[in-house]
Structures are given as structure tokens and as C-alpha cells.
Image (tube, rainbow, N blue to C red; front, top):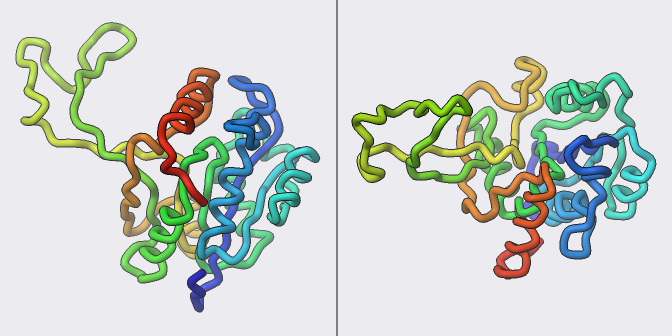
Amino acid sequence: MKYYESKVVTLIPARAGSKGIKNKNLVELGGIPLLSYSCRASRASDSIETWVSTNCDDISRLAKKEGCKVLRRPENLCTDQSKSDDALVHFSENVDFDILVFLQATSPFISSDDINKGIEMVHSKKFDSVFAVSKEDWAPRWTSSVKPLNWDINNRPMRQDVDSVYVESGGLYVTTNLQLKSSKLRYGGKMGFIKIPLVRNIDINSPDDIELAKAVIISQEFFSF
């Protein structure tokens, strides 16, 4: 573990309730509760504390079993309309830190190396905040009303003639206390990318996502804490 003069801590918001998957944060993936992946990745990183923000006793018990600290989140910040950014601000009002690593329990393939890259980028003061992305080449996109999105059906571009884009993973963000309290958002100021492979950019929100993640675990032994 690399130690920094700045206090680096991790927050994993994990409330009870999920419409897409019941008890999503506790669902087992490869024999391990989903939340445990993020807890273990953080604890293997250069972050000195790992916190779970929750309103659920079962999640709280699991977090403590994984060696994490728990911050009880008010119920008004745990509704379907609540934003993760609100949980981050609540955390900043209750826990002291200089640099915050924000992990989503629904992104199990974020690694400790990814986290450490983000910490180093922010600690260097080159960036106020950074977040994980995956590179994606251009592909035809359509709206639900069957209209091409950002391209002309009469002038279909070649893939190699269109710039690649970077897709935000949603699983890993690193920011400073100052930036968070100033913007009340997970990122802001001068922002940078933490590039991760597309195969690890999986966000668990549906049963299909779970099956995809299981297939990744079975087919590739790339993941370690």
C-alpha cells in the first residue's frame, strides 16, 4: 500500500431496495455477494478507509464482515429518486477526508489497480476529479422512435472515419473534498479519465447483466483484488 499525506477514503453507497433485482447489493455473483467485490477492491487499494453508506442492517453486517466502516444513511436519501451525489455530500458532512474514492457496488470488476490510478491522478493535483471510462468505436445508434442518432441514414459513415468515444463506467470516481463540497457532484473542475477495458465495464442493473457478469467470470480469469 502506498501512503499519501492526503487522507484517502472510499465510499460505497449501498441502500436497501431495488426494482430491477431484489436485494441487488447482496445477490451472489460467482459465490460472492455483489457488494463484497467493491469492498475487497477498495481494501486492497491505497485507500486507508472503506466506508459503506446504507440504511440496511443486512448490508451493514456484510460491510463490517468485509472490514469496512458503516455510515447510516437517512431514509430520505435512500429513495428511488435519491441521487448518489446526495449520499456523497452526506458522507462529506460526517467523515473527514482529503480525497474520496466513490465506488458503485453494481460495478464488480473495478480493480484495486484502477482505484490506485485514480488516486494518483488526483493526488498529483493535475486533476480535481477523475472517473473510469471504456473506449468504444462508433456503431449505428437509433432512438426508440426508429430514428438514427447523430448520423444520416443517406450518408452512413465508415466506422474508421468516425472518432471513438469514451463511455463512462459509472463504477469508479475519485475527487477531492473541496471539489465535492463546491459542486455537490461526483466530478467537476479539471476532469480526467481512468481507462478500463470494456469487458470490465459492466454495471449490474438487470438479470441479463448478472448473466453477462457470470459469463465474464467463467470465461476470463483476469480479475484479482
